[in-house]
View 1 (spheres, rainbow, N blue to C red):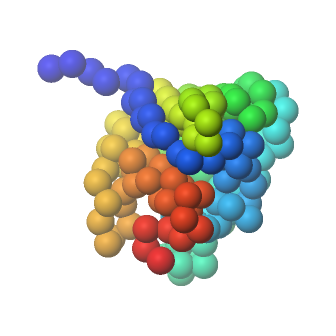
View 2: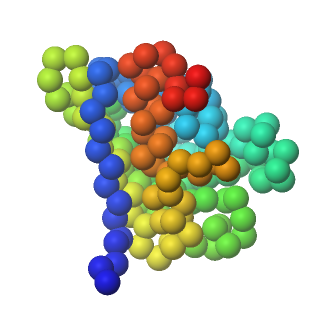
Length: 161
């Protein structure tokens, strides 16, 4: 059996790299798609990254900060490299930080390619969660998050709207 250590997701979005960058790094955008957690980035090497619980998540007893990390590289609007750690439970926190790279490239007139590479070696809980299929119970992983992001940028509405 082959051990997967890096997950790569690639999607094409009819939007400019600047719009995609903003949707990834600005809280007013992240609160609108995927799990709708508001993010805070200090967009500089060594800067902090945090994703906050939604009111629905908080009602389930999760901590106020559900994901954290550090910005390693920041080249707007084309590349963001960061660490990434789930804080939903003590077991998830104990897995430690994983490595996440966002790459945005102009592909042709009017659309861009977004590639998300997530190094999950040594983090089996995270690997399972970020590869999960969408379900009404709150799972969906990167494929669902990126599809929702694409829908929002292209149509103004998310998949669930």
